[in-house]
Length: 183
Ligand SMILES: CC(C)(COP(=O)(O)OP(=O)(O)OC[C@H]1O[C@@H](n2cnc3c(N)ncnc32)[C@H](O)[C@@H]1OP(=O)(O)O)[C@@H](O)C(=O)NCCC(=O)NCCS
Image 1 (cartoon, rainbow, N blue to C red):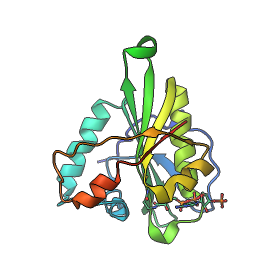
Image 2 (cartoon, rainbow, N blue to C red):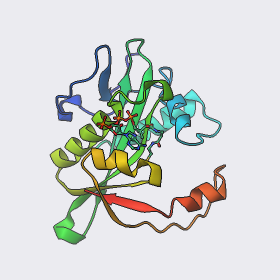
Image 3 (cartoon, rainbow, N blue to C red):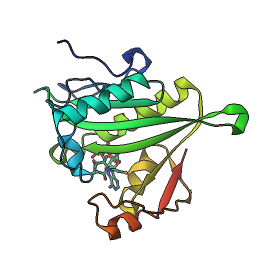
Image 4 (cartoon, rainbow, N blue to C red):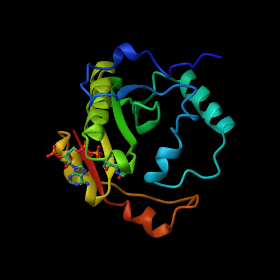
């Protein structure tokens, strides 16, 4: 069965990547290419199966004006980077749209090649294309400089109430009461 693209790639801006790399929407077959595996660099992903991936992909596909997940693949067709933009539909600002950037990861062996920057630039461009009046993200202290280099600036505080630790050490969750970076 042919792979399904999460959303129409024509919304993506022209982005120059190092030779051999491609950036595109997440596809239904990307579990096999390592789309979940690469997230382990960021945090726990739990006991994951391809079936669970397909379930989540199908949900996102049905709501693909809300979930924009993109991946970077290397020359071996392996997912080496991933990131998501989620669109929130508000009442304020005349029923405005705001974007939330989530779960940005580049595989350890591929860091430092500007792939993270390209993912953020692409997600920011999508947020503008769909009409968001702002895009926000939460990050740990050691990534603030990275997001500044992506054109973001430090915004207000994030507050967290943890209801389910889901395998994450509580101290890590609570450390996330840190910074919101607002574009
Ligand atoms: C943070 C992360 C996404 C950056 O991706 P990357 O592809 O390695 O970064 P890039 O090569 O695009 O870096 C762009 C610029 O930011 C700088 N930069 C990257 N990470 C940085 C950091 N943690 N602190 C300071 N500067 C950083 C780079 O040196 C580069 O600067 P330059 O333009 O002056 O050369 C990647 O390191 C990663 O996946 N880390 C682990 C998971 C994680 O923390 N994700 C973020 C969740 S909020």
